[in-house]
Length: 187
Image (cartoon, helix red, strand yellow):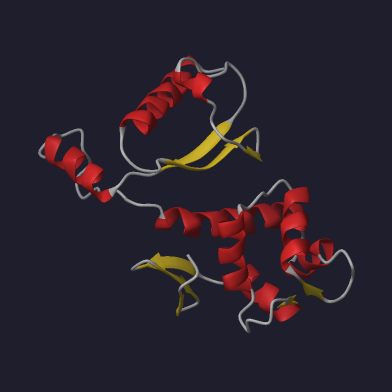
């Protein structure tokens, strides 16, 4: 409802349409995954909450930096993230954060997702369980998450593996996902 927020959103949509590459990632509208409709290029809605990650290609970042080099409005030492890798890290962090809002503990989250009570989670249980909590992962995102969760590669996530995710350090470096110091090629 804030006119300034709407103006900023309208500007982001304009830039996303004009700049090359996949610029919007992990868009949610009222806490649900969402694809921005073309009609929003003309006018964004008056109500609702939109959250998104805006990504730029490295060449675009360099052009902008060159254009504004020496501009006092550009913060000293500011380095803009480029590409989409950082979004994957954020997606894992946000997924874990949302799980922690819904669940009291790692065990509580595991048990809520383990619908059949079998003591392990398969890909479908994870996708459905997260969806019921308002977290939708695309197939590639779910694959990346399974690559992190299923550390033994067995296709099922045991509680110990789940608990590791609940407590792990997540980072992206050099095109690979680093989880607790181990580099994984899952993205």
